[in-house]
Amino acid sequence: MTHDAVVAVPPRSASGITIALLSAMSFALSGALVSPLLDAGWSAGAVVLVRIGVGAAVVLPFGVAALRGNWALLGRNLGLVTMYGVLAVAGAQFCYFSAVQYLEVGPALLIEYTAPAGVVVWLWVRHHQRPGRLTIAGAAVAGVGLLLVLDVFAGIGLHAGGVAWALAAMVGAASYFVISADDTTGLPPITLAAGGLVVGGVLLGVLGLLGVLPLRAVRASVDYAGVEVDWWVPLVLLGLVTASFAYVAGIAAARLLGSRLASFVALSEVVAGVLWAWLLLGQLPGPLQAIGGLLVLAGVVGVKLGEKSTPEVQQIPL
Image 1: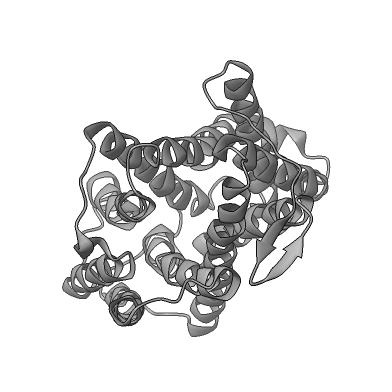
Image 2: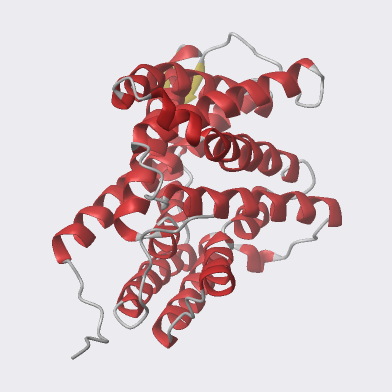
């Protein structure tokens, strides 16, 4: 008298996908917000440091409150929080911006967003969760969609150093999903996010002081869709929306969906990034990019259907 079929819980799954999509849309906003700042003379390192720093300042009080005085819980998971901050926050950000020094943004993003494949491989090797056929098919469809969305068929030249940095960013992104999905620690999602942002912000600050991460700020107004705003407006939005909310929502979604499905839903960030660029920067996507967006969504659906035949371990210790 055994039950081999996995019983899905639609409300939990539906809410998880909704939160994951909101997180992806929030993360995606960063590209459109940052672009005019970089054009105005800001360095990528300065922008990301402000982004993570503001996010840490906003989330930290709520993260501390969520502990309810149980500092021993934080102490037991200090290593995990540190790993999250180093790999998922500072590592992914620093490696990505290092990659775009040698690669165009599109190819660098494409390499970084092979992270879902890394998650699938990790779960297969570490936890013996062999992906089903629908999961593999969905991953392939989403991959083709990404190629179209990022318009990489126009012809690119890959720099070996840039590829290495982008692959390192992929490891950071994959770590984000795996660590976020681990609900065995007892840490509230907002506490994990707060700790990770603090660790990541401190690490990026140290890199800046050492001169490894160039820091350059310019107090000049920037333009979005024909509207001129003060330089601090996009920085506040970067901290509040693309860091504070995005990281907390992403962790919550990963715990509801598991790291594999959450990582594939996060592919919608690329599609959302194209839409934000259209709305704020007037960069209208072409027909192939539109088709690619639909393929990404179709791939996510395929991965979701594959979850019914591939047991998902919600508790995923590293």
